[in-house]
Amino acid sequence: DPVYDVVWLQSKTGTECTSVSSDGRLLFWDVRKLSEAMDECVLNDGNKDHPKTLGGVSLEWMQEAGPTKFLVGSEHGIIWSCTKRPKKQVEIGTWFGTEHRGGYGKHFGPVYAVKRNPFHVKFFLTVGDWCAKMWMEELKGPMLQTPYYPSFISAAAWSPTRAGVFFLCRHDGRLDAWDYFYRMNEVALTQQVSDRALTSVSVQAQGRLAAVGDAGGVVTLLNMCNGLVDPAPNEKNLIGVMFDRETTREKSLEQIKKQAGTQKHEKPADGAGGMQIDEEKYHEREQAFFSELGMSGDNLGTDLSGMKK
Image: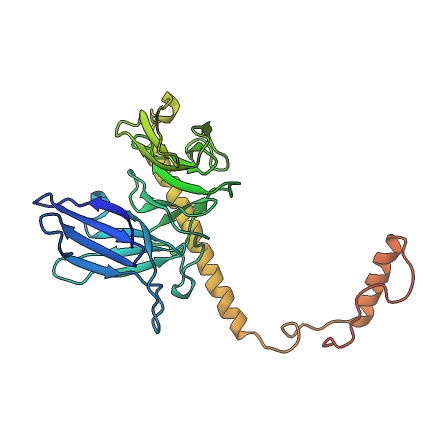
């Protein structure tokens, strides 16, 4: 099967890398001996009884986030967090977006990009359908997401100089720049780059230049404006506070859902949760409502026959 993504690893020899493929394997290599992989991890859907192998299409590794941590985007909209420890088998630690693993909010298509924020490495960005989603390592569902686009999103990249800026490639040939420091509900800048679908984007380390590739094989070099390059005062800390606030909100919502689920199981199964209905008062209020609307006649509303009184 095709290899969709390859990442170089920091090692003493400088010859190690890892790759992910649609055959459902995350492989670790030493380029001095490419005849066989050093290690591998089989990517599955997280089902404990009958695990199913799923293909991988994107890969993220960052030394600052931990040399043993790998994020992998799947063909089925979920994201894996894999761990590779010395002299131990590579294992999957978290299935982001997988419902039977306690997750939610998966993408509706292959996850074509997984990118950690370079300033706050616990937070990462994914694209996989008509929107981009923001995740946090401690949450199994997304904490933020963009509105749905009219066209498919195919690639993403963070700004290396501004903590709240990221770029999205669209299949209608446009490149969008989002600036969460300025506003979170609307795109900051849209640029028509090509008449063909955009497929990849890479931003220079200094943040001034961005290379964008399209489906026709053309690479366009963009020169960014100062507003997308120069960080605002205290931007890194303020974006971190915003991410932490959204994380706390999502954790609170998860706790509320768990409590609601527990109470639902404890409720009696009879009627509408044991609620008593006074049929006479119900009909009086119903008739008053229809009188205000200028309507008359018998049995205009809901028939309560068969309901528990």
